Length: 353
Image (cartoon, rainbow, N blue to C red):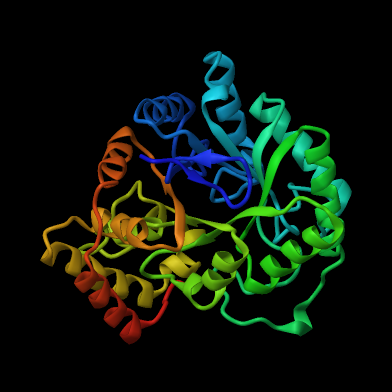
């Protein structure tokens, strides 16, 4: 894989990133370490995590994923220098009081969260430090509409940037990024950075797959014109786009018991549990099989085929899933198939927006 540059930073990474939010919940530590080792062995040098992981988020597993990765670094001297490590500071609480006191995300919160991540990860520096979701109220995680009445912002973007700049200056962070962000947010972060000589965001990590293509409703132009790289998360739609639910549905006695949507009621209550998302996934999975691809290959090939995507974040719970995902790297969707995907989107829109 030819490495790609993240935004205007000096970070160069593989176009596939290993996501780790299942580590510490669905994946135990020995299996997580095996996945990390095999991923690096296969050439993947980009790892993404977050302070709030594992997912689904619980007080008992807060920070567990970073701890597992830190233990892997400690047990394997020299490995840390071989990977680009990304993690995230959680935004305002969203019903998770165990993340921090108060409902905001102040400059002090950002600094404290960074220190916590460094400690758990057993490292001196985070290569890419991202804001997990905006401090502002924005439509994210399945919400469609912006509502100014719900605005509760307390920490200006300029103040957030200054806090991140302090971490960069101290050598604790190399580059910064955003996640679950909007065109307005990206523009403001870049504008203020350029105006005040502060670090420029290198990346935006947003959901992107055939069920959720909101990136293409204007954010893609913003990223292109401002030179910011897209990290696409949930390319398999929490498993909907693997085909494993097509016959059984996401609930009931025949649903795959260990799979994320079937296992967790909290996930079923989100965008991935919508009937419209399930029915759309079945249509895309049928198209995959009609052209001789597995649904997993098809879903990943969609991301790998799109100019918008710099690196695709894959999340796995087993070595077998890892191998299947990595073996799909050379798959691309030809123009006529992408046109069929666009036709289905026109009909069903973005059910998991």
